[in-house]
Amino acid sequence: MTNMETSEQSYKLQQQCDWFNAKQGTLTGYDCPICKNKGHVMFIDEEDGTTRVTNCKCGAVRKSLQMIKASGLSSLLDSCTFATYKARDDWQKKAKESAMAFLNDHEGKWFYIGGQVGSGKTHICTAIVVDLLKKGIPAKYMKWRDEMSTLMAIRFDEQEYNRQMNRWKRTKVLYMDDLFKADKLNAFEKNATFEILNARYVDKSLITIISSEYTVGELMKIDEAIGSRIYERTRVYALDTGHDKQRNYRIYGGEA
Image 1 (cartoon, helix red, strand yellow):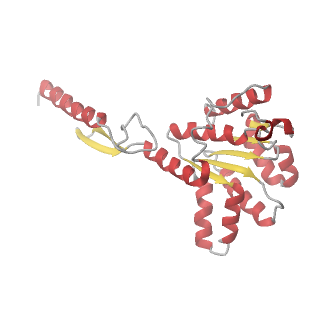
Image 2: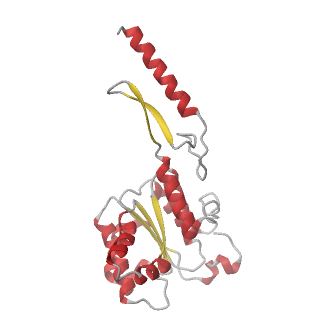
Image 3: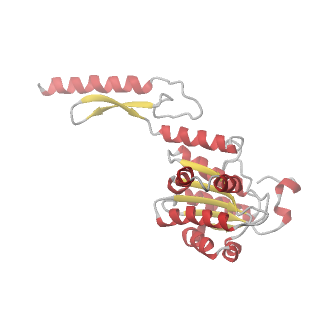
């Protein structure tokens, strides 16, 4: 085959790929600029010079969005963004700046925000998760109190228990919301939480985002093994909103 024929064939193959990739698909829930919501993209295989179709990376985003929506964050995905976070006071500005910095410095790191109820902790953490999802990084959302109840109910079913635990241990991004929110912590809740966080602590490629009514210092008093691991992984990304009821915007009418 002459160079001209090879060039013409490559051109036709590229046209075929461009035509396929430009077609609009029908998938909903996430607007993907790569596959145009088809879920697949076409490319030229350099080894054999033929076109191939592969899954688009937005599949992970769609699965994560579906999981988060099923977990109760569906109403927050649009409202809890960095654009909608009103940072008027210095502590709010610091929270937003730290969260946005974390997005560019998240590999193998953790983000923690603890303190006052109603101060926008969930807003900040959700904004981080949504941004990571849009970048194609899979994430899972855990409502700590609800999941501890689920795990306790299945603790004697070893196979199911391990299956559930592995979901939290292995996901690339885990958002653990309202850590240690309980009337009275029991040994099972502490042990299960340690099991999850220690697995993620050991695997430095995993990203963990945590919100709680407790500061990291207060967590150390509750369980030093858990608190110290969180502190070591977060460092500059461990935020404290304080315990000031004036910062509870659910009561005092501000926006966070």
